[in-house]
Image (cartoon, rainbow, N blue to C red):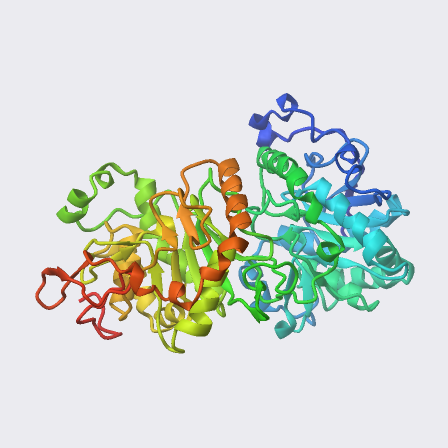
Length: 610
């Protein structure tokens, strides 16, 4: 309701019975199992010996929004529906266009929600004044209660002192816009109870409300004003990879606490179901080190919450006192393959590529040699081809999101990566094999002519590209040229493997084969010399193969020297042949090391796609 003075009052809905809204009527939650409508404590009491701290939730929703599927009837929940109208901002309030980006032109209702959010936050400790923690979420946030309980218990009993504050989640640094470090609220915000109560008891929360409604913060987003207000009492944002603002693909990890967006209740339910199944397998690694706010948090990336110094991922794995080179992964996913691969962790640099199902029709007819060489491609679906044509766009995003990775690794959803061996390979390549400016593009090589390139790397077995190679391709503008050719040009009927090979070839980089990459199966998964393979089996079988490889790695690790990483002569294939770019004929490749292609001529950068 809006008073005659124009001041908007919040609508705070106290706990209500679980019910579905009309927009999700087809979800029929009443017909689903009730495991997520039952108390969560029995699922975690065996894990946590000490009492689980209490938590109260503030959920930003709409009028008549039901309680989230991740809550129980016993939970302390306030659903806050902000008013749809509000005062105009004073002329002294400045818009921050760089930080607001697309929201600068958001409708008034959206801005009213931002300006009134602290009013709803003020109600939370009034309704639940003794909660140990407060959790802030949106209506499309998924919260994994077992992991949240573990996090709160570890923070309360092993990490935080009695007088310490806590304000954590998926962090982002807006210092360049004069705002500072914030926690993005869609991914969930965890506040210690004493922290929020102190904000109210000092009168600072009421001051912040006035500043947001009618003062200098009138054009600030709600997650900005939370950070700015807490800073007034010397509480700063703390980043943690367990909270994800822009993706739920890590929902199967026991260390995931919350994610966003999960817009439909049925989707949230499925995420919770998968997480609960996986939690029992991964809960033992949830210790104080995991719960502690990240000291090496990466505040630059809004797409993924990353901790660069916690957990031994590829970026942090140590070998003989050295730190293995960092690797950023591009994984082809889909609606049925949306889960984070088993071989990744929350701290990895992973970009999941979900190709569009619709795209423009090709302006050119398919080349005869493509269809004749791949009889299955002629009947491929439109969605499959759209994925091929847009793959290089995902490659562009990988470089933008992870601009400093030493290596980039491209994988399909059924690619199995053995991280110890991959770390060994990248370490050897970086420290003992490659020259500072040498390019690398390796994997399971196939002998198929692609335009000027004679060979390509099959993506199912994984593709490893040196960081400088891909970044130079992007910075030169040549990657964008290849994107244009793939989406609407002469490469419209090429598969992604072909396009990667041809794009790199025209930049002067050719495919190199390496026996550590296996495209045609995982029969040798337990060998330390195998870094990747293409697994057609299910996730449980993949888990068994990862365990077998891990068990054997320490026994055979000593054979993985520089000669293995550089393709020793013993691996040469005397029958290997290449496409000679001068004679335009297939000829023996006498100088191939492990299948390394030595093309006689390559175009110079800048002269592409003639």
